Each structure stands twice: as structure tokens, then as C-alpha cells.
Length: 413
Ligand code: ZN
Ligand code: ZN
Image (cartoon, rainbow, N blue to C red; front, side, top):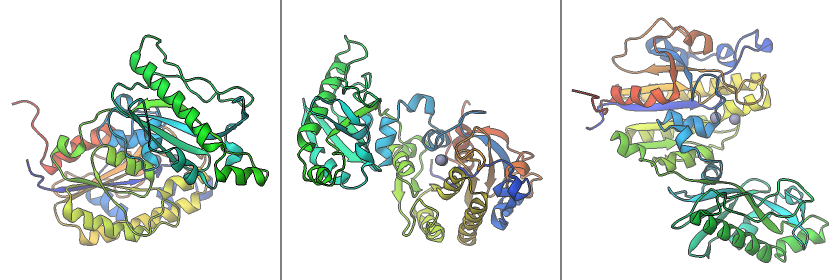
């Protein structure tokens, strides 16, 4: 089947919220002036969506997996692989990934500081010193993340994530030996040996590294070892384009969502001037979206800023970034082909009062040709309660879109 229409899944990260006294007991979406979002609501069908399930506080990673039609409870096997994806590492099905810290140990491997004096500089060079080694035929990739963090990715045959942490999680304790959870499990035994060898190698290569000599000379703690934890195995997934018979791409601005999109087999496009921050150029993103819509059938787009405002507890800024998203939407609507469906929603709520992700459902609008429509006149949490789509789960989205796009196989005769 060839797609008869196209679809844009536009996600305001953490856009859902709760009523806020400062905004006259309105949510940021209610308080914001959003003529284009409201037009979608007036002309389309609205609803509320539980990204994973009612009351579940979703992460951006698990929520996006659900929104793309993958069961996060099956796919999400520990944070390691998603940490690695988030910092732009290429992750393949079967890879074992671990979250890591650059840490400081004494010569007996007693942990002095798990965060190596909260190191912020020079970690890319330290990472290069240990990246790309091969141990027992297993390729070991290491990449730094922000500050003292990083990820270790193991690629090879017969690996398992059923291993213990090296990081003792407490200062003053000795570095732990990585062990298989089940002593009979050969894959886990081998993986544990590789991890232990990597930790030893990190100490040998980092303890006298010029960056660390310089740190010691300045009275700072050296980042003289890498301590892995939280092993997870990357699952084998059926790629999104094959599964649905569509050409799919993502226009995203954060490493995590880019990593997830690539992991499910979508291509990714970067818009110039997008930063994943509050200063991100959303009009540039809109232009990139329009270009991508020429070439692909299904586009995922994630705008990060609303989530940042929620974490900062800044409702006025959240109103402002929602209004900028509305302007980006205007650009898309002005040039949209008549066969385009737009689904605008959020991956979870990040209420300013909570300053973190909550389990509140998010508003959703579906807009495009031949929809039945409903009575909703505005796009926000309370208006969408009365919408024709009722209350959905994130995993309902892809079937709804693929049947409208005309690419879904019939279930039955
Ligand atoms: Zn998110
Ligand atoms: Zn967040």
C-alpha cells in the first residue's frame, strides 16, 4: 500500500499542565493566545490522551516509544540504551549499554568522589582515550554526556544485561566487581568480564592522562576511572517504516528523541538554529518540517521548550513558548497540502507546580480531511475533555493515523 495522505505528529514536550493561580487558575495552554491550535480544534477532533496509561508518569523516551506504537514495557529494558541514544550513539538491537560516571578513586579503588569533582571540561578527550577498544571480541564504545556522565556500549555476540553494577553508589566504598546475576549464565559471565576489563582499562588510561594531571595541578579531583551501572540490552524492533509501509522522518532538537527516532528506523532532520533550549528557532523548525513533508509520509516533530518551562516552574515562559509553537504551526498550515493530517499533542504533562512530569493526561487534536469533527472550539486541557476522540492511550495514535493515511491492513475479512 502506498500512503494516500501524510501525517505530522507534532509534540509539545511536557506541554500539558494544571491550572495555575498566577494565570488566573488557567493552564498555560488556556492562557496562551493560540489561534492556529484553536483552529485545529475547531475544524478537527479532540480528546485527552494518557501517553502510557492513566496516572503513569511517563518519561520522554517511554512516552515517545508508546506514541510511535511500541510497547514501552517490552522495549524499555533499563536506561542504559536510552542514555546512549540520547547522546547520539548509534545503538543496534542486541547491544548492551550502561550508564556511567567519570569518578575519582584512590590507588586501592576506594571511591573518593562518584562524580569526579563534578567535572565539566575535558571529558570528550578522556572519552576518546577509552573509546573503541575491543575486549574478548566485544567492541566497546564510550561517549561522554553532560558533566561527569557518559555511556558505555558493548557490541558483540552472546551478551547479556543481567549483570551487577560496578558503581557502589556510595562514596568511601570500594569499586565493585561486575558479576552475572545468575552465575550459570554464560552470556552474563562474559559480559561481566568485558565490563571489568573495561573498568580496569579506563583506570590505566585515565589516571595519568594529561587532563587529569592538569586537574590535580589545579587542586581538582582527577576523573581517573569510569564506573558503569544500569545495564540494559537494546531490543530488536521492527522498524517503523517497514511496519507501516511509510517513509518516516523526525524533525527533533534533543539527542534523546533523535536517538529514539533513529532506533525505530526513522530518518532525522536537523533544523538550523534549533537548540533544544528556550532560545530554539521554531520558525526554522517549521521550514524544515515543510521540506520534510515533501519527501516523507510520516513526520514526528518534538519541540522541547514547554517541558523546560515546566521543570523551571515558569508558567509565563511556558505561555510564551506555546505561542511561539502556534506561530510555527501557522507556517505549516499556510503551506500544507490538502492531504495532510496533523496530530498535535504532548508526550506527557510537566506541570509548573510539580516541576517534573506528572501522570495527568494531555490534550490532543487531530486535524485533516474527512474527519467527523466535534464541538471543541479551543485547544487546551479542559476543552479537549469534551472532544470526539474521548480518552485515548498513546499506543492508539499510530493506528488512528495509519488508517486515515490509508496504509493500514484490514483486520479480518
Ligand atoms: Zn517529554
Ligand atoms: Zn522533562
